[in-house]
Length: 193
Image 1: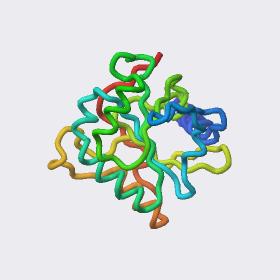
Image 2: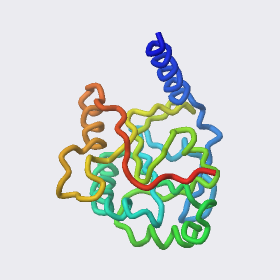
Image 3: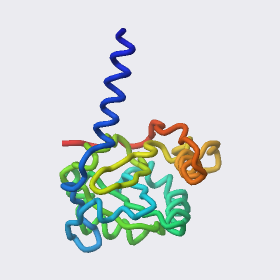
């Protein structure tokens, strides 16, 4: 009975997150410093939201893979949003000027945002850097199609055997069920306040 009750709670929690109204979620665009509505940045096909920051060594080890992945997906018409959750927690290393410098040195396709109040972090339940979410929006309702690790080796690209995010997209595009729809990300912990 405990297992059944726990399963119901997990399913209900997932439904609440999936049905969450994102109309009030604002991100700060790093390039301009302007506040933008999350929903306005997710294209018709969907988006990949990737949590990163300026100092996480796991983000650094994923650099070339993030570059390749983001370029492929923007060419297919998907939006790519890189989101830094640490502007308020690490103002000396994750301030707007540092984020601008960090992003200008990357060959990533997409745009860089700050989530200074951690509203998006809390909504999605993000816990690690890097962590990717494949999402779609209908009106103001966010639907998470995949959440978690980019692949199965956060430190060595040459030893990757499973590309979770790319496999999720391939399944989605072919009309198949995304399996797994969630894979624990490994990396730096997101510092919440």
